[in-house]
Length: 117
Image 1 (cartoon, rainbow, N blue to C red):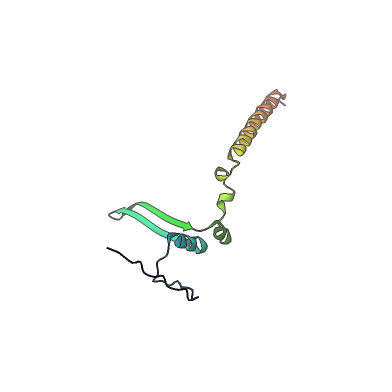
Image 2 (image 1 turned 90 degrees about the horizontal axis):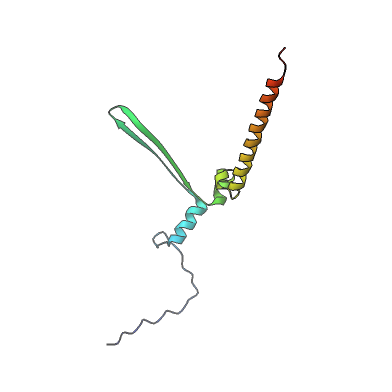
């Protein structure tokens, strides 16, 4: 049994136009979401009778870093736990706390050594 492959069509120079009915690849969808951004918001409430036991507000924003900065969201830039300098900042913080404790102890000793008037 012989199966002949269909002959390829000659190129006519026309480009294809993507329409809403054509499928999009996952990469295309992710690119669009990161370019434009997406917001998902919702409220969840758990009640028994007329007593509300739990209320949860969910706000989720998915966007590229550039788009987030454009709309004024940049909290990760100042968060020390997301910084590559986390260990450096924690060590500096510990040193400052030790110095502060030393100075407070010295001040307390000076105050107790002063003559009462």
